[in-house]
Image (cartoon, rainbow, N blue to C red; front, side, top):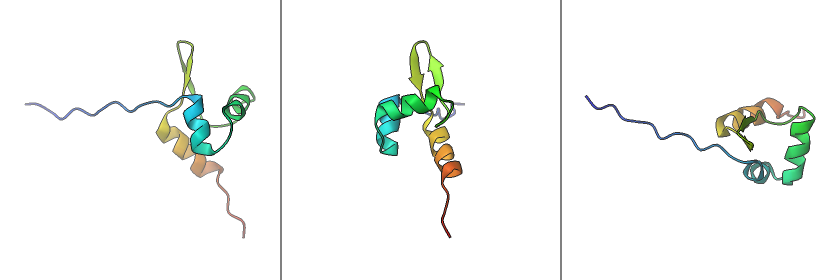
Length: 66
């Protein structure tokens, strides 16, 4: 029986994440070097971000003013 195969999710690079967050790509790089910012992974020499982890990070860092 053939089971449907899921398309692997596409990881994002630093520039794509910066665009999503509305900041310069250097800001994301500085956050990464200081241990802040969205979770990332290193694949070879490439830094990549999981879009689902990025959205989760955004939810946890969002605060509301009352």
